[in-house]
Image 1 (cartoon, rainbow, N blue to C red):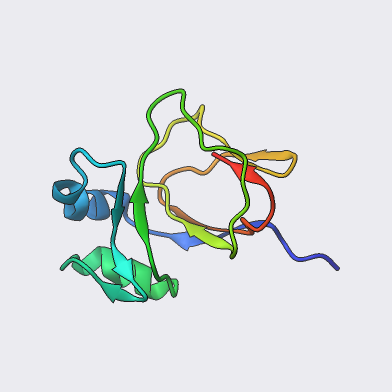
Image 2 (image 1 turned 90 degrees about the vertical axis):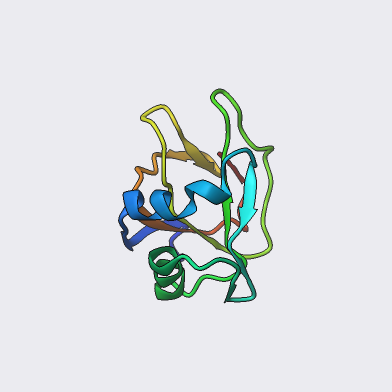
Length: 116
């Protein structure tokens, strides 16, 4: 039996996270939130969500319209928490495309080839 490559783990309140992080994310494309599970900012709700899902070395990341990352593999699976998205955004994993609506928590085996 093969292991899943993509699954929904739960959900979270996107508005609460956006409200907490907006001052740190004004003009940067990537903002680190944790370093080896140590929180870098006093973000009560955000940090509780990261802790709930056992996350570490977490970052906020953004892509502008009509941009995507290069086709690549990561060293470990990743957990994704989309904050803002639209119906045209896709996460491509191997030969399958997934939509990741904001507010859900996704576990993705990013050791496999992917892009977003």
